[in-house]
Length: 220
Image (cartoon, rainbow, N blue to C red):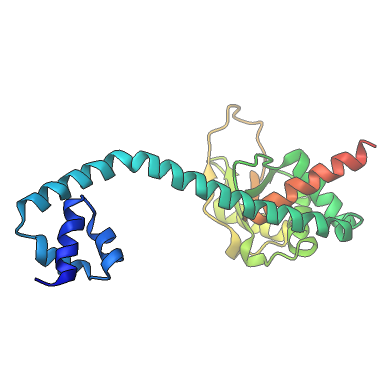
């Protein structure tokens, strides 16, 4: 019998997995399978190893989740560090200030979500925020989207044309509108509510940081 085969049998009887044996002896797992496939004692070891692996899976999953959290945390910190450097060159730009103040008051400020979204019924406010994203932050317009919140009696295409003309956002960037039933039959927003957003963890981290930096400046 081959010496490496004898050694493989010894390791297998020590309840080593095919992967472990393959790594030690540099033997393909397919070869190990052919050697042990008729050995009932090896099948018992296989079943035991399988159970142990299944029992340890929650721990492995927790370890993977912890590692991923640390990795994403480090990446987010990189975004914030870059944002802090960019702040010095942007903080006196009127459009930058206007966009941040709008987002501070009207935007989704939860760090839980990566989406940077602002909703309002004022077309001028939406246009300013659109220009803030596009010009102050140099975000390509193809990455900026909107969707409308409308009442059932409003015409979808007509409202999209209105918001397109009022904000300068291309119709191609409009997603499907959402229709809701208002509580009052007559008191309602004539053109609905426009939701403008961009999906970017990097921009979200930077925007929240910039707002915090302005809070500190204004609180002096």
